[in-house]
Every structure is written in C-alpha cells, then in structure tokens.
Length: 241
Image (cartoon, rainbow, N blue to C red; front, side, top):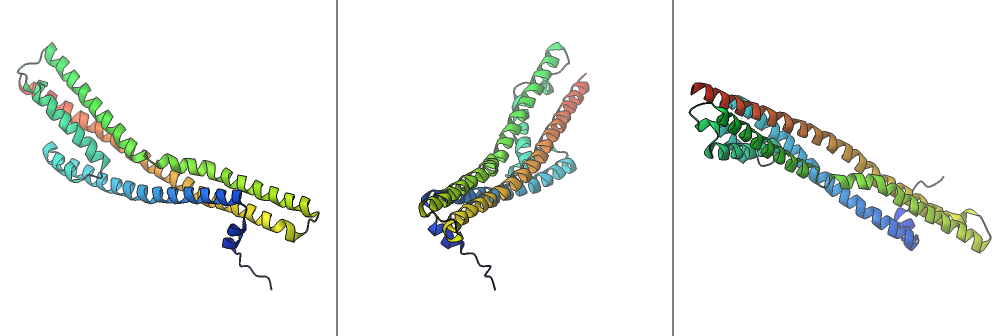
C-alpha cells in the first residue's frame, strides 16, 4: 500500500532559504488578498442593499427633503451619498439666486439656470468619482496578486529544480533520493502560487462586475435627478409668467 499523505510542513521547513522566502512572500499575498476579499465583499454587499432601498424610497417618496433625510441614514449607499451631495449643491444654488427666485424669464435668467445646472452636474460628477474611488479602493491589489503570484511561485519552482540538478552534479547520482527534495519544494512553490492567484483573480472579476453595476446606477440616478430638478425649475418659471 502506498501512503497518500504529504508532509507539506516538513517539505517547507526542509526547503532552501530562497524557496522559503518565496513561500513566505506568497503567504503575505494570500493574507492580504483574503483580507481585501472579505472587506470588499461586505462593503459592496451593503452598498448594493442600501442603494436599492434608497432608489426605491426616492421614487416612491418623490420628495427631495424626505429623500435627503433618508440619504443621511444610509451611510453605506453610494447612490444616497451622491444624492446627498447633489441636494446640498442644489440648496446652495437656490439660496444664491437660482432662477427659482426670479420673477421673469429673460436672457439673464436662462444663463443663470444653465450655469446652475452645470454646477449641479459638476457636483454630481465629482461625487460619482469619489464613490468610484471608494468602491475600487484595494481591488487592484487583487489583480496584482493574480498576475504576479504565479510567476513568484514559478521562480521558486525553477530554484528548486536548480537545487536538484546541483545535487546531481555534487553526488554524481541521479536517483530519486537525490532529486526528490528539490522537486518537492519546487512543486510546492508552484501549487502555492496558483492557490494564491486563482481566488484573487476570481474575486477581482466579481468585484469589478459589481462595481460596474453600481457605477451604472450612479450615472442613471444622477441623470434622473438632474431631469427632475430642471423640470421643476422650468415649471416654476412658467408659473411666474
């Protein structure tokens, strides 16, 4: 009967210093990538849940002041935070002489309305960029892990095989007892590199697809919010004619 048990700890502890350093480096990448995976999964999950809730509340309420109060409660929602920024900007513009306070529609009023609308667009665009930065923070490290760790493991593999050939050269024998230790540590380095890279790549692709969905929601919501504001301004101007 052949034993299928592999003493991985024994292989690692008996490996050369270079291979041990490679395995330690891969362990660092693994710990960091799994920490990021857990953090971002929780963050993006809450972002989806609270954003869906806020969007549903916003369209049911159709009251900006009520939506603003709700947005302050949903701190994990990117859509709510973008609305929060847009609402504050709209409030500043209305207090500083937006067309709502005009008594007639003339060329100056139109220019002010266009300028106010552009200011609101810029504020929403900045808010979206800020939210995207928060969402993608740390995620590129997963891509770096997925791209580099297989090659780090491959370096350990090559080094282990070099040790095996070196032992053959020193002993003059090419039997299994001579080459097995170097080959074993080489294969451990290869397996470790792949074990670190595969989850990182899967998580990176998953998070980026989710972040893309949130980005689409942010762009769509900001466009809808702008349309609502511009319609309200035009309606107020027509009522003053």
